[in-house]
Length: 376
Image (cartoon, rainbow, N blue to C red; front, side, top):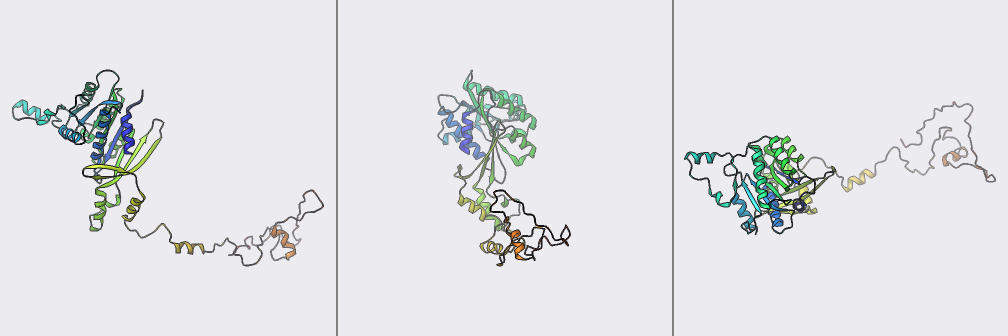
């Protein structure tokens, strides 16, 4: 599923359609959203450098980490940023998001901002202005790919930081404008779902064509008082979890896929859910006082139960009452009715209707029990 997301971001937008948008959401019980974000960032960067992506550049909007952090991350992954061809621009919304440090420098009370200026990142000093933020992203992207129809992709490392300074309607307008811009190939962002109301998460998911949810292996390990019995379960959830992806199409079709992930040496890896892991997950479930499955003995005992509407085969011929005569009559009269075989004239080639008249002293509606053939 992670590969499917990478392909969707790599292939970009079709002609006349909005750019693919991905929401990565996590929570405190499984805080590995940033690992997924950096994984997609490095994969997309590799595709851009190899000219396998529709986009020819990347604009990274840094809110939760400094630009130097991302440069070191890409260099550790073997992606050289300081290449002859400019392919990435970082909009620094981390160093001075509200312009306070710049105001202190202007008044002579501050020393220096930081060493982030040496990274070549563009500094944003007012993240409250969504229009200016949108213009800065588009200008940086056009500076990479130039004029024409060449596209670039946009990555936002934290929507939560934007929502600290702007309303959800303003943020939704920013994301919508980026998706509808004909120079944007794809866009993805990270959101911590438990930091805001459910309606905020619902708005972000509605604007996305893909939603990646990160959940623990077992939800029952959380939401309870901490005790020694749940510590192995918490440890099991700490380094691995479930990765659910929901793809939405223009025709309304929704496709949901799932796989597992595990974090090893600060790197996230994905794999399909195996049967062994399903057995482990079931063994980690809390014990309850009931069971929805039957054992072999219980299944055997259930098969021996005699149902009241079943003939038990006592050796006697099965006679079915037809509502016209009593079963206590002679066998000579009951057999044609019980067997249901019509007595027809062998010499006649035409069909016959045999009618057995009721006795003269019997009322039209018999008082006989119609259920006397049942073993009750």
